[in-house]
Length: 407
Image 1 (spheres, rainbow, N blue to C red):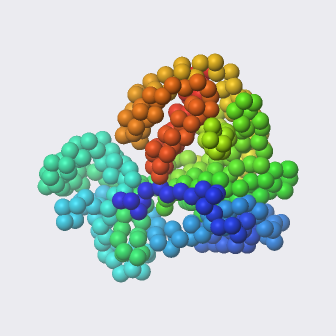
Image 2: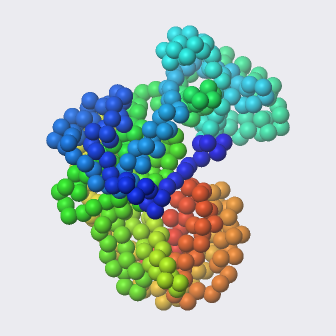
């Protein structure tokens, strides 16, 4: 379902007049959130309510999130296992029955709905039933829906389970989708809108306190997750290569355990033999880049207090830069290319395996310097093009090949 795949935009695609957004317009994005009052107070919005946030791309970001809100209504439905059946017209759906007393569905005059599972929702649902995901998948693939239905009937006799399901209602098509299963206890809905508001205001305050500027260099998103890369005006020369820019990545996932994360990453900017400037984001494992994280089970008061940890960003960026600077010491680019080849051949993630042959063709050329290595990675990015998750794994692969090989 392409409509749920991640999309992206970069700074060079922004309207020329998008120089930021007012605080008033920004916080309106979360005006309907149950946490609006707490966030307003804890982030001391009154002190900055007349400010303009001078972060290029902020207005486009907010407009993008508003468009998603207009298209999808998100419903957290608690349902007993006995009220769920499977399949509609031989297509796998989770059919939620007995909705007569559910406020949202009363409003749209529905007593039952059929929801199509998207992302990992099918796996999550069946894995929670005695780990029967592979079994269920094989039955569906073989066309044995009747066996799975009988399994569900028998399980309903012995299963006492009430779970909370995140449904998406496509209001234009009047179609429902199952996005995931969330905790029935201690789940705070820190959604994409909250991530954008908290992120932009946090960076705005840092810009006021320090001699630094930010712009939204890259944004990757879908209806339930958001990854924003804010490029700092701070950059450091990388002798013989180009320069390194500090980047604050603010990521959010509405379903997974850790919702809102601030990470410190970097980009390498270099000029190739054709005098064209390129940029590559390198990303070590999260344990090194994490500035702070706010899980769904954390109260807003505790979560907002943690934003003070953004001050750790300088230390994180320095550590990442120290790693990246080691690429100046590479004496044998061919050896690094060999390590990259081994990593590509050994890739187990489906996101990368499907591109292996194309990657290996790019690695068939002789490499004589670091710039040529970086150009190979740039070609890798072009190969995966709009495949957002593949690009994310490439960021890790690039870091491991160029940096960890030097340790």
